[in-house]
Picture (cartoon, rainbow, N blue to C red):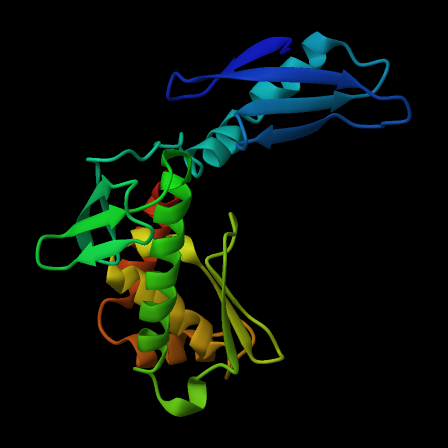
Length: 232
């Protein structure tokens, strides 16, 4: 049960839960976006709730930014349209089918199985399509940039990463971004095989791999990345 309600700049109200902890020296804030939106405040024993709320209000811009990047979830249903990997697809549920079927001619994705598995099966289909597209996109770069292994993740703070072991990981939620934006992240990570930093030489390699429009794609992701978390 929440103690207070915090109002975002958008007008949305988020419950606030305050916890007093012995031994704590400073007030700490922990905005949570999943499984439900809440703001948790931990405060020292001698700090009043009013002081804790005042501290929270002083962080309005920071808190707004966190919730802006994690929009309310949209529940998917049969008959709904969804856009991924550059195409607009109509979702249809047919519980008599055991598997899924994508009709590229009509743009209809028919999902089989039980109703309670509908969203999960849509998600799994998109993830498999994303991985397929990802591998094709990687191979458009010169071979010396190819990773040893490709993995997909569901991260909230990073769209991609490149390890020193040769593994590249990508957030499958890039499937909901324009293809040129997805390609920017791919080329960004491929460039790290040559430069494990963000030096001028690194960015020159990104531009070399991507070509014209790299700054536009980068800017789109910065401004709209939160939208990629609206499903599931």
